[in-house]
Image 1 (cartoon, one colour):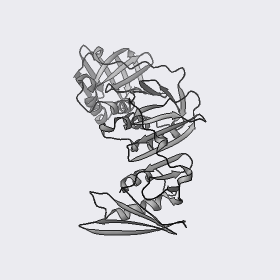
Image 2 (tube, one colour):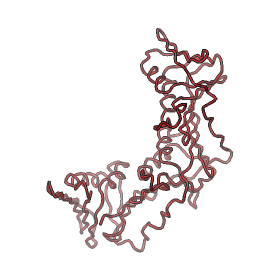
Image 3 (cartoon, helix red, strand yellow):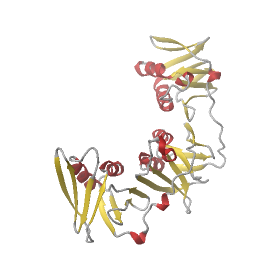
Image 4 (cartoon, helix red, strand yellow):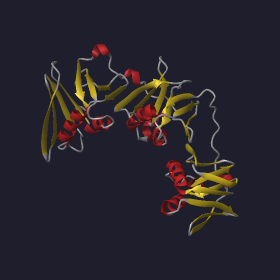
Length: 366
């Protein structure tokens, strides 16, 4: 195999593919990137056996087709430090040779036949969604996924289609729940499957062009996402996702609907949380006519009290939340975003809304 690559294009493809390299020592061969050169194109593929990412390499001239494994860490270091426009990559025997200008590197390589191939998935009936809205949906839900393996079925994002044909994403860790509804799918249907959070955050980083279409293929055990340049495949989270609709407050039970602005609300939370007790993480929010009072108490350092004017005329309601869970959601939106918080009582979950397409449920602390 022999190819001539634009250094920057090869570096970007290697960095992108390396996002799915295993963080644990599963199998030594998986520390490599599989480089496949065919007439007119070249691709890189990396996997940790659960998540796989194929990336088309830009700016490549293939002189001799072939397949080889590239040691990911070393190749990225070379490409990052090289100060040349082009580099030549050639396989000679059991070594890969990288040349460019006055630079030449020789590295032993492993047997490419020992590296897993990308899974084959059907694309004929794949759903399609625009990249820009999809990235926003991922960003506003994936942070709420569980990280504790004991909550395995909550370690991913639920994909489903609404009755109107729009894609909906839902994530929860049992203490908060984020749900967003996006545009209607151009075609196809999103089945009710749970995609791992790592796959979701990786997909978000792989979509620089907001206008491109993303094909989505959801199968019983695996899923794949494809654009003109990348193909991301992942195993699904197995098990039953919690019945999220059962925990959403019913409209008739809501006692207060209070308008807020994301920036002012987040600022008040941060100010009051300075005195939070690190063990309980308990922030008091007391809603009274025209005013929200936020307060925290720390047995060793003191207390805080912050007031935020509100358009509210109902009965007083006091509730307690972990401020981190509130701020995680609020930082996903610009400061001038108009929101609404729905309250049943201080002992019930609170529901924050940002328009009709986003809901965030947070459990109170006792």
